[in-house]
Image 1 (cartoon, helix red, strand yellow):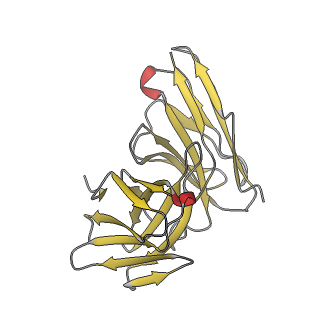
Image 2 (cartoon, helix red, strand yellow):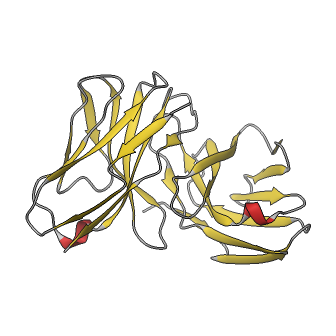
Length: 114
Length: 111
């Protein structure tokens, strides 16, 4: 069972570069999420999506963009990378946010901005 | 803002002991709570959840207790094993809103 798959696993960017973090899930979940985790901290929500074509901001959306063209994929884009965006990024999915179902996470993308 | 916190950043136990990891939450309107386990280099892994209409829920070797009076959540791990070594996060939410994560407790199990 693949679950939530994130690529790449590691990436180093220079300040000002752009990149897209990929996330795909094979569980037919409607809800998908992007989090960042800074060292020694919990996860903070960047963006989420309740279904194809629908996205919304989370707690820390500045500097990021998302799109949801299919149920399976939810890419996260950094347009102008900044050192403050050095973090571990996790994608997650769940069946139904409203009814309180657990989120299932990928193994993360470790991103360093130098 | 509202946040979920954990009482201790680290917990060290001997193999075979029972472990108790505590979490205090601040939002009395939260109605769903989750415990996640995160091993090094991995994403958070769902362990067990509990809804606010329950006080206790048991899984395999794990028990979650919810005390709504004092807004306290705990995770009990029976017969702790070296493979249980990880960072444990509690998270809370209200229906229709986002999960709020605490900072995590690092559990170290020595054999």
